[in-house]
Image (cartoon, rainbow, N blue to C red; front, side, top):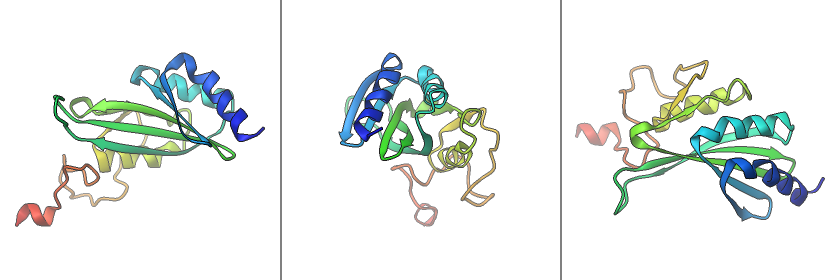
Length: 157
């Protein structure tokens, strides 16, 4: 099946769960889903064998004028050949949490650990919460990939 057909299939599958569909590139579809629909969307892709979990990434959107607080956008990337589908979920800083998808895609564990450690997004129900990159004595509440991060060297100077 060619890329366009795979993306059309993903769009048809995800349409009932998505608030919006974005086509940023010829080989990519992004479905914006509410947090409550995330696991259902992931399970749907798994159950239909649409593709495999390629990565979980994130974007930090600090407070902007007219907003009360910043948000973190968590993006779950799935691939089927050259076709890529992203599930985009937005969580506020004050409630930065998503459910684990390790029960559906066990390989998500590394990405979930990175998300917790580097961005401060709690992954509820993830089976492994050990640190992945940072040392065990790294201070709690300091997330090095958030835009607000100030290096510990600069903070102590």
